[in-house]
Image 1 (spheres, rainbow, N blue to C red):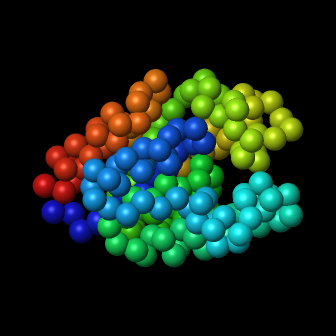
Image 2 (cartoon, one colour):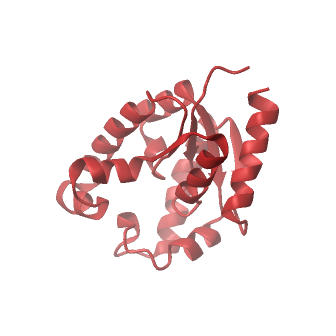
Length: 175
């Protein structure tokens, strides 16, 4: 039996980390946390505002603090922000403190899932397809580097993705 009793979801924006995480937490009877929501709750403002006032660098400091704190909890499913993996420290604590599941998705699927979102500061005032491609080129290897399990979410329902992860964790990791 593996001693890591937390599940951390990583992947690009629009991969379904929050939706899948909520469902997976129910299946595992774990507590669900979302690092972006945690940052917003602790600051009292939304991420868009943080980006406007402090830039991406300011947000990343707050994100790092959130991940450091949340990963010390037990029996949680944590949905991280898409860029959480760019920080070496985040990758280290995620890999050391839990089982990391990479929710992989195509650029086309990301575009479909984020096209109406107004809370994606990295997609503001830019060509979303170009930006998502650029982000994926920089981040894909970082996601893969720390992933214990990779699951595609393209064209799949949240419940089915969460059930697949649950089955894989039970079969391969916790039995």
